[in-house]
Length: 220
Image (cartoon, rainbow, N blue to C red):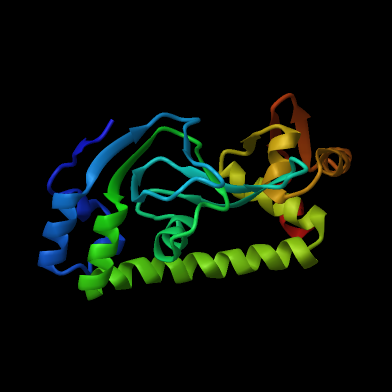
């Protein structure tokens, strides 16, 4: 699965633009290209962290699964991004406390744990890249905590539908998928979707939700 990546792959990641030449050359030399098919478990809860991934294409869903089986999506890692759960595990030496799943075919550069620590220790520009990504994601996680703890579920569901429709007007997801996304129960999501449908905001079908009145959803 792993093979040397092209020499100029760092140029396709805008966040790496501030790397000095020596760090860029070292990063290219010690990283490897990986291709992960959709559905691949990138890492699992309780497993050791062995590498730092920089995504070049595709998307990885990072989620937490409770003992009861309830799930909540913490965030998604897209092209040009990194996973802060991985960063935290590499820096602390603890095992993963969440899981990552490839939602689509993923292409990434893989930096083995020893190489990650080497660059973190010797390169200021690489440290800046790592900690800037970490800080940005922490902010979004704090917003998620606030939403889960204090936000109205109907508003969170409406915002989720608008975000996932991505301008197409249709969300391809089951009620269970949306419940996982929001850290809620399927029954709660189904009840709210039925209410949205009754109001004429959405049309429900098996495995999909079509947005009929995005403006009303946004004002909800």
